[in-house]
Length: 335
View 1 (cartoon, rainbow, N blue to C red):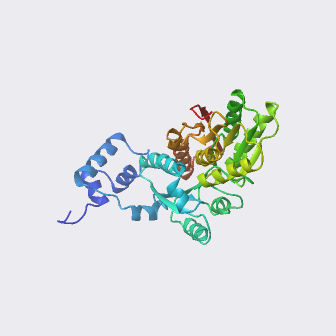
View 2 (cartoon, rainbow, N blue to C red):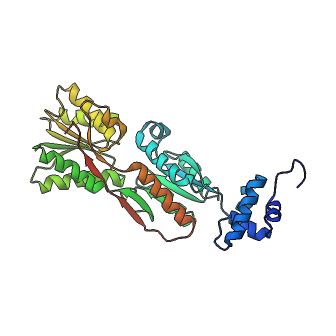
């Protein structure tokens, strides 16, 4: 090896006393290598300070060592709402051990969505994680049709993509209303999330099913988009329309925080006058007054599972089409 020249794969093979092909198989984690050869190559890599040429490797393997996370929301929401931070943390934890890099793309509106589709289908990434999908989003079908392994976190309300990881939103909505009913609340309202997403639809359906099973009148429903301001508006709309409910299920914790503001502006106390349950178990739940009762969905775990399923798909292994993670009620002071 010449002075100043970085070590090559041939140098590694020579020091290890093996062929170049054997050294390459060790570096690519092939199982078709003897333990002795693997140990010798790894020792040579460490002794020489060899760094694999990923660009050259990608020409052979047709892999980039990169996956993309595409969030179909504006950047302002992605960086301000705790849900997205938690799911990215989970994805990062799963990818860290694999050596795969993560690229974050926001595709909340055109032309960003069009640019993302072009980039993702032009062999820049090995696979794609899709998050916050709304109805009529073409990306899941487009990516699958072009052979890009894809895993979705949740799904649009109108169709189910090929591979989905999600929380049990239906059971979560039921648990929230069951808790309100068990606390003696009878005039219920739901602040529903976006109905073009399966999460928003399923949380509402679960809540309405639980109210019907309890023999109650159909809850009043107002609409939001999971944001705090939409929760405040939805709650204010309900209060302006007639007598206040005595129990409210909000489809996200941020919507519940907005509802809490509207209830206080109307002179109503939580939980004395109105019991309030959110959904997510975001950190904000422990900083409201009173602390927020909520349905916990395992957001970080959802991110980890999404990444794990995608890595399995990239490797060509069979994975389940649907993975549903359990939710559970966390009781605090608001209900």
